[in-house]
Image (cartoon, rainbow, N blue to C red; front, side, top):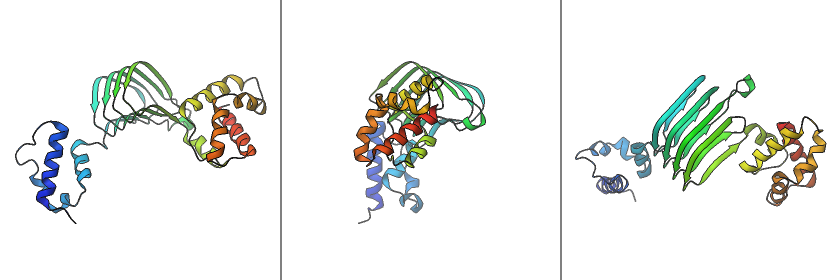
Amino acid sequence: MKTNKISFLVRLYTALFQVTGKRPPRGSLAHLIDDHYYAHQFQDILNSFFQTNATAIHSQASGATIIRDCKITNCGTGVKTEGPQNLIIDNLEVEDCGKAFDIEDKHKSEGLNMGIEINRGKFKNNKTVLKATETANVKVNDIEAENNDVVFDIYSPELELILRQHGLTEKIPSDTLLEAKEVIGQLSPHMKKEDIVPVMEEKKLGQWLNEAAITCSLTGVNIYNIMLAVITYFA
């Protein structure tokens, strides 16, 4: 049964009071009686009030950017960056956001590097503190993270696409991916790719693939090809 407008506005008024701790000003909800707004779901209207899907800072510029002494709360994303730039963050607080940082290195193929340096950060009650492509050069110093679902989510869209062709339907964990990148980077100048496979079998990647073999129905050939694909990608 469709909720009548009076009941709807009472629920919205109550929710706003619970979230903000303040009574909405007299007449501030009058525009919601309009049918256009009333057609929206209750949560959608709350989201529009608090901009929970919004991005506080979206940087696509090249060059150097400095963000200092800021506090961001209740946004979908705190800081999103895509440009080939050196981004320096100093003394930033992010609370109650979907992602504190969303860093996507879109310019690797153009030979342009992205460098992100985060100093003195406090992150609380976020779903993810840092989501970044593995090609981004990220340095983190002196941060505090409290009650976040995920601290670091490192991913590689190109690699994930390659691995799906070999039957891997699950995402490689961030710490496993970073270890593989580091080890392969050290070994590849001195060893053939095929010779690196036995080394990686003893690392986190090999252990994780053995566990993923059950859920992803991977054969021994699949695992070997996935391992070789990862080595080729990072070599």
